[in-house]
Image (cartoon, rainbow, N blue to C red):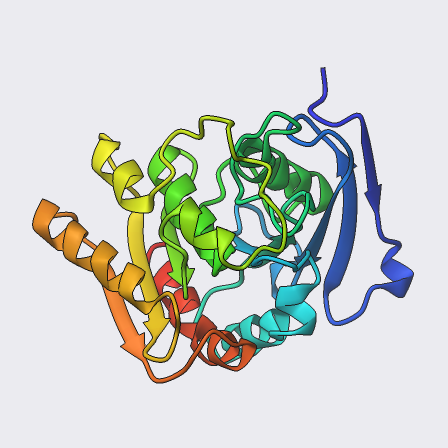
Length: 264
């Protein structure tokens, strides 16, 4: 039985700058999910191309990384210059409950399975360049950074490396960004903290994260760094000037892509 009940893919005649749009009804969500995909021309005729999944923060959706951060243009320029190999970007919605799903399992839907299982499978459906042998990388900003770091720890067999930009490091931190009670309250979420998830893992993917020195989540990132150092867990952590803004994420996304390229 197929993973998806329905798959809608944009018509190539109307796609622009290598961007493709998918709407799928899969296993994880109670309804449909949207994914913006960047398929650069350099992957034409190739197979086993790396896949990078970029996750957004609270209030956002699948179009944010492309149309607020220019992620596809950043990746395209780096591919053209030879700085990174050709790779496909997948930018999914989080499932769109309330102000944000946290990318965790909830009673209404399994937003973890949406990212871990449905999104890579949907991209394989949409482009032959990504296949079962493709390395899959996971990254995100804020809530998406929390999702990337936590899901990478929980599913190290699915992701070769993970990266968080300005990441929340515990579910509780996300509540401060939300206008209403999140759907995970009372759901008994496993591993609500990134450090907790990483300490429980028998093995881990490559790990990096960064944060701005004016970011309200800075202390949580520093605490995660200290906790990983104390546990002897290999990782890369960097601080830069800047806050919790798209200007910061646009400027520092290349570091994440270079980190992934070195492991592709």
